[in-house]
Length: 358
Figure 1 (cartoon, one colour):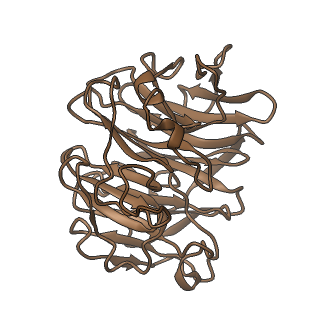
Figure 2: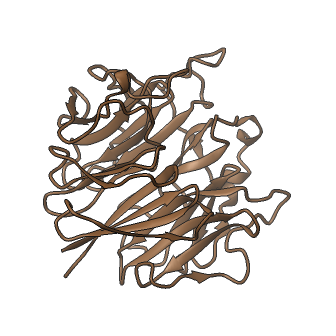
């Protein structure tokens, strides 16, 4: 078994390979000096690597590699573009659909919009139902911009997709994108005049396990939540964490009750509490939490962003994260122990892992 780690940064993409998930060979940069906010492995067939790449000269686009980064395919025309009076700022998310929908890949963008590809990511069409939503003029911009950064296709029903954005909140479609409903009941937006609004919440990440499609987990701007009814209502699961602020939220690939997050202080201090680098894990769907620290440093005055944490799908899954100070860590044993993959990289924005059979 080989695990390949794709590490997207503000100045290019690095790839790391390992047979044991302890020692790593790192190569790069690919797409040097270009922002890579989104990376995705499409493992529904021969493994495809997709990267949301923003060139300061040519603008944003999507690059494809079918040989794990040895060569890259770039479209002659922009694969993602607005057919209306808007311009693409950045691709924040690339998400292949479940195996039952071969060829379907979703992209979340800034400004907040959802695009759908049916040819594996070579070309995309705007999902106009979300773009034309009457709430859109009131969606705000978070500190990082106004973007759809989370896309969760339903593992069974191709018509159901959930998206999240900062700051707009969670929206869900049940008719293939024709119509969308805000799904934020129970999520607090302390920064708004009405702290319990229909929409406007600043959600940072939403995660779902395919064997439990009615359950979602969310890390918000001050708030950690779980929904057990498909996003209709949410309840806080922040008790036991050192802070309710953070960006990452990841589900164990084989256990829908196990989740990982990386708490940081806010709003004026975006560091882990006391500068201690700690991944927090819950084995009971957020009822209790434990700090994982074996192999992780103190004096870690940096943050882990919303797409800079992931797992692989090995029988004993690995867990991975990258920091804004360019350090990347891997755990081969569900977070029990950690090893450094790389240091001194540029600001890490996205990390994704794939298991490549030998």
